[in-house]
Image 1 (spheres, rainbow, N blue to C red):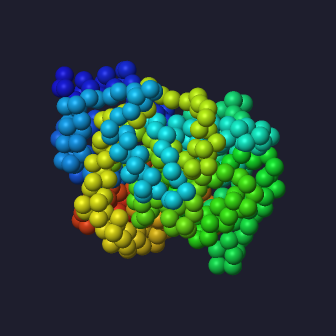
Image 2: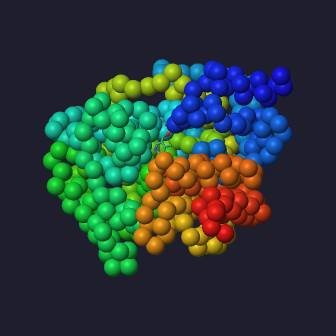
Image 3: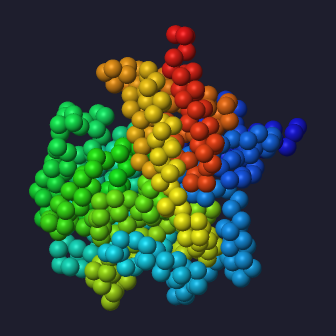
Length: 448
Ligand SMILES: *Cc1c(COP(=O)(O)O)cnc(C)c1O
């Protein structure tokens, strides 16, 4: 048996993959990735694929970036890990200083952890305890958006709003108040964008104000609700929600796990509308996609409230030194290559390339913000009627793209494109054209 066949066989025998029906997986031809270079993944058979979703939204500057490789090996030469419980470490201090320097001014302290869900969990627990300390224990309710995704731990799921992922766990969750999500393509208020005056933002503000006596915090993915289907918020929505939180004394938690670190064209998505959150959760791209690391940034006011007591939360690998050194190297690339300034041209090219995709018969809407995009596939382009779930249209498009050398992943019937920032113009064009061909092949088959 060839080595790659043995690996695939053993995968099917021993592994349990996330978000995967394993019965389907066992039937599929699976790809075993062995190496990566730039925006490309290479499997055990030597086949190359474009990494069209940045290895699930985490990679920024490409695979095998020498600067990050070197930083991690240098750190390895010193130490891989030591605890932050009772000890400090050089890379975690340096990284915290950099994060505070880059983040909105309101954020002054960094609490490290190791994945986005946990960064959210930390923010929720901090918000809850903050109001206890302040003598307002009745403020313990959380507000979150419909279609929200904040991670997979029980607290993060409690503020989640995706039926398919979250409904099964309902009996285990704490109650959260749902706030209108600005899903313009399927407007929850039945309005049209041309004439709605962002009524959903007013509705959201009303809900926030009406709950001010009992609400601890509102959590939001600024600018784009990612896993909910790449739902891009209309201009002004975020600022209005932030204003309502401030006016009502409700803490604002910005979950920038997906949108942070340049993904939307700014270092942080909060910058688009100049908002100053009380807390910010970071993860995914923080190490350039190299190692697991996450952080919860906190305002000076929240930190002060806790200063003379303990926050009972921490993890074995909190602030891991290898991960922090990878993150510092990623920031080095941001600086040396002026990555944020360079993104503008790429984002414009991406928009230009996506134009023709929107013209396809079964594409209901293409939503883009920075270098993240969602292509919503529909059975009827005129009425927006969705496909039946059993048709697995998104999954079929992804398999078709894979045959053409592109790795992408769907969110239901929304095809996600999340190119790493290092993609060349040619690779970006190839990514979008393969996606377009794959969509046409699956959705228009039999009618041409
Ligand atoms: C991915 C994601 C999370 C969870 O991060 P993990 O590292 O997968 O736990 C939380 N919030 C948002 C917005 C995300 O996209």
